[in-house]
Image (cartoon, rainbow, N blue to C red; front, side):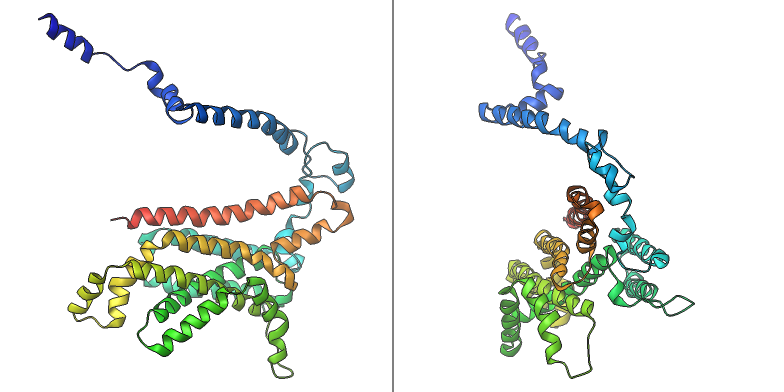
Length: 362
């Protein structure tokens, strides 16, 4: 009886308070070993030394809508370099009175992207709506109809050029990369050889060299009197470059598919097109979602390299703003602002990829 009572009392004992709740979580994750305890305390000390001064510089002592002279007297950040030049940083040399047009185009683009995030909206109507929507945005920017004045592409700058190069580039590079991956896996020697040569040649040179070739060398090979828009040349270079990297990622996904999947599709009498579209590619593309999104994020950031060929993207319009003597010395604030824009784009793609992985997990 005493032994039974003792066992019952032992079973009713609760774990110590230091092993549950917030204290238990801290002990398990931050102070579970001497080394981790040291790292936790060291990081807390670094935050104590850096975070309060940063917050004071960013918010408490900052100025938000003043001229450059008053900014030089301020002890904190000069966010006026952004607020006073907001429209030029975003829209660049697009005519001031017509800047509502790129603003509407950006709103339409963001609306399309938000609508496309939901997999239940993926259908044929959406596939038709995207090209129509992009065409409407392009016509809205270019003008020349319904009383809208025409705006040459040389004046397209700022965030609209960044989004144009990235969205069109990523949209066109992905299917091209899939085709190249299939070509490299092809049993036809000619197609396989051409795909290998293209992929290895493009991956063997940096994007900057392709941009220089598209901007400087390519026009030399055109007949006299024929020119191709500079933005289109840069767009093609970005598409070709990104597609080569996507092709190698997709090829890895194709190699990861078990041979039995191919044999099962062939046993059903499916031809090559149906076998790839219904059986192989859906599995391969699902496997390579993380590395594919990494390449797309890198391509989105690499669009800033077009500044070297004289295109005024978001980074270039910011640099032009900082070249004004009134705003010289406030580059930290300006670059922090555009870094937040790039972070929002990259984080959105990364978050969408994680969500898509979870939905496709079976």
